[in-house]
Image (cartoon, rainbow, N blue to C red):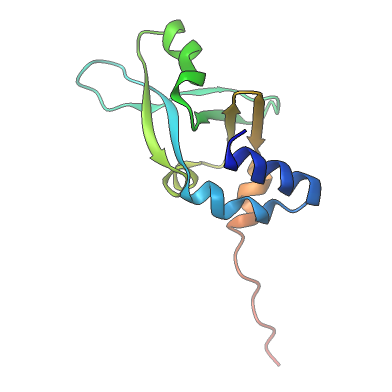
Length: 125
């Protein structure tokens, strides 16, 4: 079990998503991308989410766990990306599917919004 998977499990048990943010930000992931042609820059490859209003970005710390994507489509490539960069790419209709050897974790839109919520405004007296 990776350190990230351990920390995510701990955050779930404690019901505190904030516990996983520092580790996610510092982790290097492999992200599934699609390239339209050899000369084109890779773009995020989105897959359906369990939430019908969302699409998932698939990532893993272990590139081998993403082999099925590579085998299913010759235009699929993996891009190395930091967790910090990854969270910066996530759009409103996206979730992040983090794949591990023994399962996966869906980083929901609600988690991401929670982390990046605006600071509460100070009450003016």
